[in-house]
Amino acid sequence: MSSTDPMKRLSSHGSSASIEEDPAAKRQRLERFVADQQLLASQSIPTPQTPYVIYTQRLSEVYRKKILVTGGAGFVGSHLVDRLMSEGHEVVVLDNFFTGRKANVEHWLHHPNFSLVRHDVIQPILLEVDQIYHLACPASPPHYQYNPVKTIKTSTMGTINMLGLAKRVKARILLASTSEIYGDPTVHPQPESYWGNVNTIGPRACYDEGKRVAETMMYAYKMQNDVEIRVARIFNTFGPRMHPNDGRVVSNFIIQSLQNKDITIYGDGSQTRSFQYVDDLVSGLIKLMNGNYDQPVNIGNPDEYSIKEFATKIRGMCESQSEIKFLPKVADDPTQRKADIRTAKREIDWEPMVTVDEGLKKTIEYFQREVEAAGGEIVPTGPDAAKPKGAN
Ligand SMILES: O=C(O)[C@H]1O[C@H](OP(=O)(O)OP(=O)(O)OC[C@H]2O[C@@H](n3ccc(=O)[nH]c3=O)[C@H](O)[C@@H]2O)[C@H](O)[C@@H](O)[C@@H]1O
Image 1 (cartoon, protein in one colour):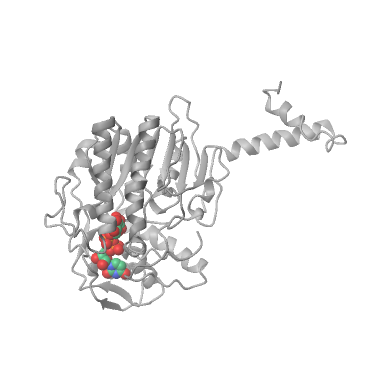
Image 2: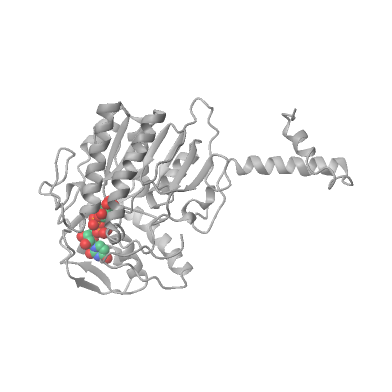
């Protein structure tokens, strides 16, 4: 029978190597080892990507959940993982590393509550979990347009697989849907009751229609199989850990400004977006998952800017000499987008807490580090379909 005392268990290993060792010194060494293990189980390890320490609570078994995050090594997923880990839950990340990066979760690799699995959600997987945050899918237009068939499979087969898992293990599942399901909206701002205006055969359809059918599947599983579902319609989000070659507007404008390169506006810049900081999104996702409301909920910051205004704002904050350059408009680019968040306020008591300026300040600092780490130059991704570049 093995001893339940960790000190006794450890001292019974490698006995031949420690024959000569003074018993007091040995005990001290083992005590240090156990203390180190306990320390490692209570915090993250600083890494270049996450150069600070995140502490993890010790949750009793009654409150500790086993939580699956698909796409957990991506920009949004990794911030959600940080929050769930710090709350003391067990977290399993699934990622195929198409746009996700191991560096985004490297600071948890040692932690006993954390598992990382390289897996593509278009294949089924068997796991025992209590909750599923289903985020897996490239979200940047150049990336999701690179392999549109794969994007459709990710949203359809991937969501079916995750719903099948949720049904089997009776887990609650939250879908990361998107404001893109409203297409080029004719109603402004967009409430959840708006059905949208999507071009079913346009270049964005692989993503927009994929997410629309993913929502449909969520409600079909709820009706037919009593699966507990949550649907978050996420509006434009930014923050540290955005992929430097993401190609979306916030990363492009910051990278261009930091390098005094031309800021590329697609079209005349009159199109609008409302931008939220990633920490607010994470709070919204967690509140939605753990609340009682199971209809779609917009999660976004209603602070709306024209893209031209936004370019000027970022250039100013970066103290940049960049010129603004106008390129042709991209196909089916929504002309206006602003989150109507009355449902989130009413049903899950959520609203954004971080101003766009505060969020941008942190994001600019992050990209300054990324530009330095890249040796002083990053070439931003343009509007055309592109494979994500760089190590993952
Ligand atoms: O950031 C997000 O959360 C959203 O990003 C994209 O939607 P989109 O609004 O088109 O995001 P961007 O690619 O960042 O574009 C925003 C606006 O800036 C413009 N843009 C983008 C990049 C650039 O270099 N220059 C530029 O003018 C675009 O044409 C568009 O009008 C995704 O399709 C959504 O799923 C996702 O939720």
